[in-house]
Image (cartoon, rainbow, N blue to C red; front, side, top):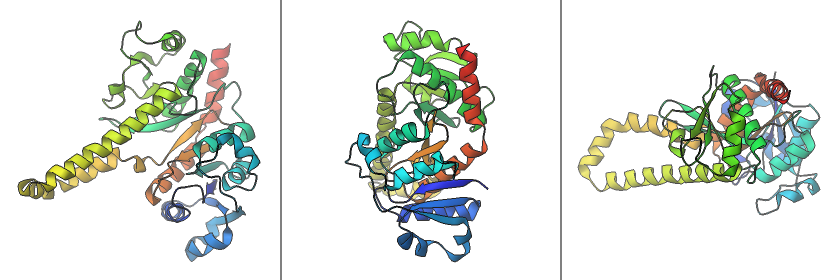
Length: 328
């Protein structure tokens, strides 16, 4: 049975949504959960019938959001440090944390280490499209990139799409300001030349291609990717707020909503970031899932399932073999 370390204290709302998500996940699929935090606080919140699946790693320190990621190594008693160590020592196969993403990335890279030949790990996130989901990477781990990094991101993203998303021939594109090969800055032009080695590379993609179903994997540097991610989150929130505002201003619209409620429910489920749970840190010699600090129980449950699916796959072996093949 797969074992997952869960940082219980790193999120914005403390341990309650973490425990809620854990319980939801265990109700659907059994696995071994190692809760990293204060046992005296956590254990009473675990239902009696689920306690056989739960063990504890004592940790009293929490790495605060306002602290610098470079200080993470100094906090050896923090929940995130101890959770990372469990992966490093092969006591668990994966970690889920809604804590400080910079600290998580830093500790994962330094303590767990990278897969052979990986130059930089990348944060990959799933975003909704009209046909399903699009994997976008990097969305924040590497704000300054070289073309070789983007090439490796493409290989890692393609492997994830095949192994975890179950897409036989994922269409890989490079984020640019136009579809033509001549478009882009020096970085994207250099990366484009490297990516042409990949059979599934379809060329440059624009921001709209994330959502129109034209690509399965979109590659970019962490600066651009994070801007895209945050802009999308803001746009989705604004659209729903405007819908609510205009619906409430019209009695006819409010009546119409009664008939459209199932449709709105499906739409919200498809585009709500909580449904995607977390973002895998690809390129690390283990499984690290980074969740949003404001994750609720549903998001944590989905992050745990991401960790389970990742751990049950052979994605890291595939990434290593693919990189080795292109290095020849």
